[in-house]
Image 1 (cartoon, rainbow, N blue to C red):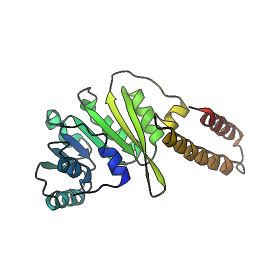
Image 2: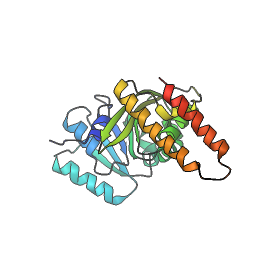
Image 3: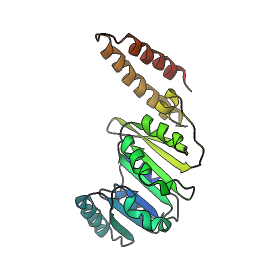
Image 4: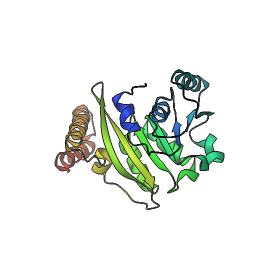
Length: 224
């Protein structure tokens, strides 16, 4: 039986039962293999832009006796456009927030209430949150996975056709309900912002930038 890391398990926990899944940037296909093995989903598409990861994905499926995965060489979601009715949930994980936004923007057909999204940015989570709300998506639920002393954001997302803007502090801290996780995320952001502030102290003409960072630090400290 396949066991997942805390980050991958948190992603898998957001999958909807009984619905076919498309895993974008699948790498070893651990998530679709696990979900099928556990009886949570009936089938999946494992997609990657490179042949090497797809071959790794096939090996994982063979190792665990899974034969209900279709392997697709695809740049993001673009290789699935003609199969858009064959799945209703999409996982995009393990890449930067800007790249996730780019993948979604290149496939406007997925801006549809039919789809359930699970997104896990490795970097630039704040950028992704802003992009989502500016482009008609909303975050239904958000959690934090802790792995190797790092925090990873996992977002359950849907298209709602309502376009809005997040404040800077909302974009930074997201929508984590668990109090301990929210506190850990806040502390991590404060540490990052203070590091930026300190790095600006010895730079010329940085006063306005330091003031902006200081104001943001104060907002983060009191945000709940």
